[in-house]
Figure 1 (cartoon, helix red, strand yellow):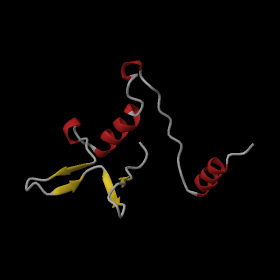
Figure 2 (tube, one colour):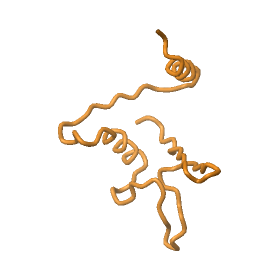
Figure 3 (tube, one colour):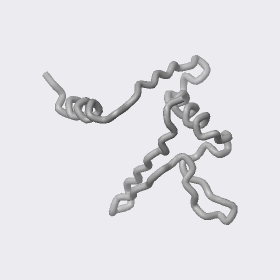
Figure 4 (cartoon, one colour):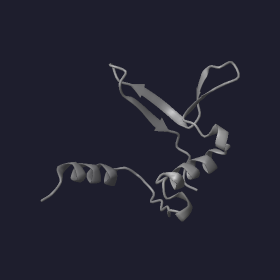
Amino acid sequence: MANPVLNALCERLNQAPCKTLRYQCSPYHVDDALHPVVQRYVRAAHVTPSDDTLIGTDEDQQIKPQMVETTTVSDNRMKYTFTLRDLGCP
């Protein structure tokens, strides 16, 4: 039996231009499934581990996006959606 959600996702992905990126897990990061993805963004953005945040503050303590391109907040302020900056493929 076909899954309509999965089919819709596959159809949408097939329409968008994309590149395939493959990541391999490390035995040293077994508790962190997103480690390879986060490290790819860290390297591409040229940030230090202390800068590795979605949103930070500048010298005047004003909110400043770091790895986030856009942010949307739901009307009830219960859902925050962050779109990461496009850093291109390595």
